[in-house]
Image (cartoon, rainbow, N blue to C red):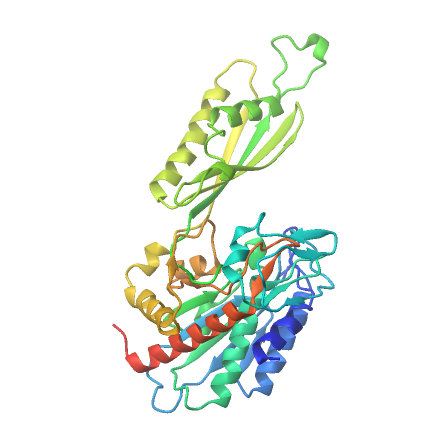
Length: 410
């Protein structure tokens, strides 16, 4: 069994589900179990590492002698798994030389007819759960790849490299990955997240993101005497949602670079109600136009007779990381060259979401994302390819060597 596979199977069995409703950091105490395990393994490799109270581990791999002045790069992976599917008592299953046929799991079938991307991995060793939990390849595949890289760099002095920071974070799946994270501790000029995605994907562009909370304040009276008196909070929010053109800007009818408006939650009654939306677009101006549209429609409703009063609150979540990566083309060029050196054609496309890399890029460290392999993340049908994970490891190894051989970058 390869070191990479052994590490992944071991990490996948550690329960690390994050909790969107928890105020703590990490949001669940079980995430500490994997953080502490990684910290102890890094110490066993004689790599200086610190486990921080804010819920992350940073390790610093010293440069090979003569390469100390090469810009330090940081490589990041997150230890938590999504709360959207069970994540405890994961039982990974190996499927060597996958033949492209449906895979029988407990209680369900993983089939290419439902998930056509499975056919990309014919001939590979596929890894799934037993069908009762998610697998956790998002992002324990990334964790295993980085830990295997660390072990190989320590055991193979011929792999010359500059200084490297490794970071293992928590709560990425609930949007709090870099909350309380001190990026200055990385001491890095450039960074890459190693997180999810089909083999070949390389991403340095994502959505601009905002959330909107609309509070409706109504007036409730007995329905029998409500004429020209009742102001229905929940009905006013339903009216707003209808007028926003929700039929053609939903996530399920948009793709590629198309933005969307997504109603995540609506609840309430006649007296009071709330609606929560997320807004996404790769173009900042279009994002702002959607926000302006919500404000305008809400104001129109406020001015109508018998309507509840709507108050709009907007929170900006993250920005398109390309805005911060574009001035540093070398961070893209080195990665593309590493892909090509391994024989993997880069699939460059925007992320229809956000990453810790978007936050880190906005904080001043340009940070694209490199695939780990697999698909159906956050579900009991999650899978990954050992073969593609091995190529990702080869790409990251090429990447750190390329930074070393290129010397100081402009």
